[in-house]
Length: 260
Image 1 (cartoon, rainbow, N blue to C red):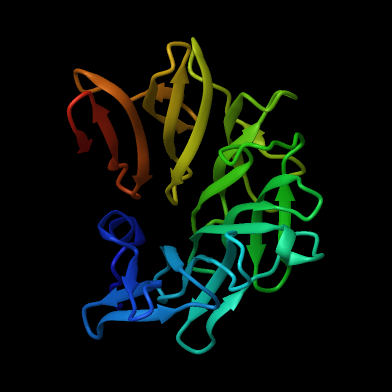
Image 2 (spheres, rainbow, N blue to C red):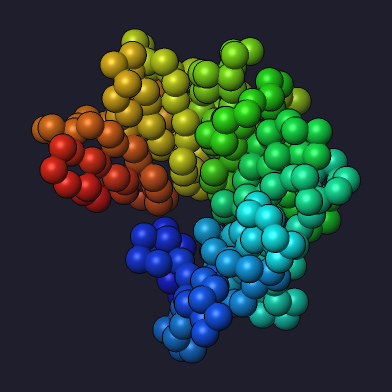
């Protein structure tokens, strides 16, 4: 099986390649062909996720004089393709961010629909968009799907109060009438899921009342628990998990930003 550079690494080391015109482009790297410019459908593009077949998802800025984002799927056969907007309509008034893709080619992310409602979404090549969010928000960090595994289980965060200030991590898969609210750790205010492995284990962040984000993990049997903090931490989140249960993330102290 061919190995592709993971997009987590690409994001942190530069998900883009500059061109002569000053644009930044999404790229793909593999050990056989090296680095490959994936181009763009407009102005700047950036890649966020890749599956084992080398299918890439991300965002680009349409070339119409405004700064907003549309989601794309790229394959070697089709090149970069815009996946559209949930609910349809005039796409110039909407945004779509594609954050992750699984080996079936199903994609998750967040979108601002033409009606102004921000939604988390699941997209499949055959059925298009499925959206979930009971409460709309003007905040970009609410109602988002960040990760999907090969069982089509999805996690992210959804707004849970009408003021749009509190959000919880969730678990959803096709066939569920509503996403499962995973709640918060005791004493916390908000939570979010950043990654999910093929065992259904989720990792992410938990926001305490003191405005400090801490890395957390969730499992069906164990529930939600914190992973602990490096001394002096001001902000930390777990960002990805593999099937062995190994977790990586970001830890910010008063003097440096650290990976863990």
